[in-house]
Length: 211
Image 1 (spheres, rainbow, N blue to C red):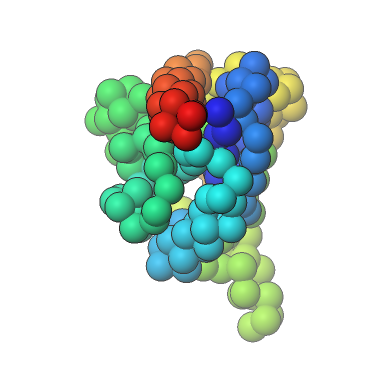
Image 2: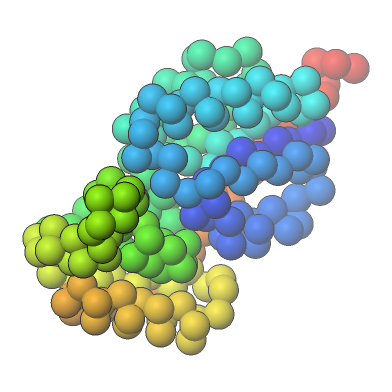
């Protein structure tokens, strides 16, 4: 029973917790956050990683949502792949129902899971493709602030991992910088746990097939 994991670094804390008691996991690869900003490149990178470890494992868990490019990737590789059938990492950690409800409550919400909170303004700069602005004598942060006006609320999502005081302080700083109202809620990693459980079941089937 060998499970491989390829996941976005944005969910590393939650996945470390979910995988802590899963001895079947033999290979874990965390990729840099914000690959979704370039969807085509993201898909190519993840397929390369899948092909790099496919002979070492029986099944691979992809710690990603669709992220604009990954829907159906399971059918493009020749190793069993399990991934949440959800739009993005916020939906995975927050559940799609709560995600939808909070968007309805305030469409201009910037969702801050621990990973997103940790990256803070750097993630906004990447999302807006402003990371090269310094080449032209511009301040990426100031440009980001001017372009961020459609967001009204920052929602800090405590998933029970990481140092909450540190993360909340970063969330407060972010909201102050971008003139957002800070709100806070909690969530868990039950969807991740369910997906890992599915991988364990599949790896057991593969083991029987090999015997």
